[in-house]
Image 1 (cartoon, rainbow, N blue to C red):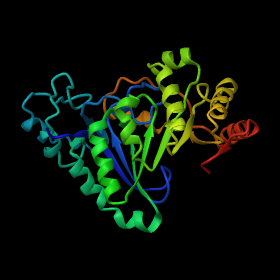
Image 2 (cartoon, one colour):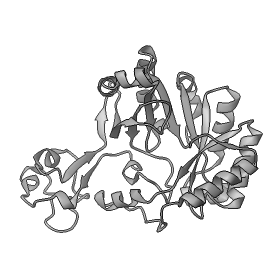
Image 3 (cartoon, rainbow, N blue to C red):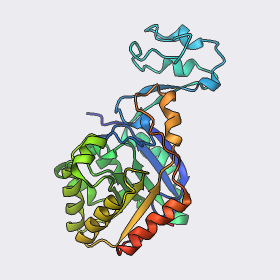
Image 4 (cartoon, rainbow, N blue to C red):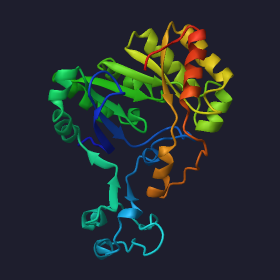
Length: 298
């Protein structure tokens, strides 16, 4: 059986998702529904057609090829209730106003794209980082890709929110060179209410990865009024100390992801927060340092 997974973006020459120059591979699907999600196009595992209104020249070549009569003249260009995501409209759109988000890749197809950056990995100590969405939703696919990377000495990093089956992932995790593990809202009741999933699995997996001696580093997105409260900072720091961890990466909130909601006609509500100020980020850094936790990223 052919294994594949929906890849919705590949970003090259990145510098903030692991050591050296990296290639970021974004996979669709997520078990959480964070109100501040920076990639709303990643939440559903199914592919979707994105519409960039400012690029559209209204030639409607897309309408001529659509077998489902799913092209609209007004509003969002694609009737998602009729669309089967065949991609014919994307191919017909000369202006690039339509794009398929979540194209299926086999491990071999993805590796062909990853190998294109080998010279940059070798010169900088970089590699490939798997992110999303939640990449752990695709164990068979990523297990194969990570094996192929290991065989070619390509450094691998996995970014996860921690909602995964440790039983399915234990052998795969051992082959990774680095794991970035996100801690968000530490209060279990608030976590389930705001993010749509239990915190219990996240807590157990974080503990297990440390106990297994895997190369895990923890991160926290700094979200105004959600994760940057005194109570949450204290809980994160206490949890890290309990695990014997002394550092954390802090990810400053920005609201650029909200522009993507209209592009995919998504249902995610807007958070309505301004980007995190440099001053507030510095305050949160100091809060962690006062609790004995160093900041791992600049």
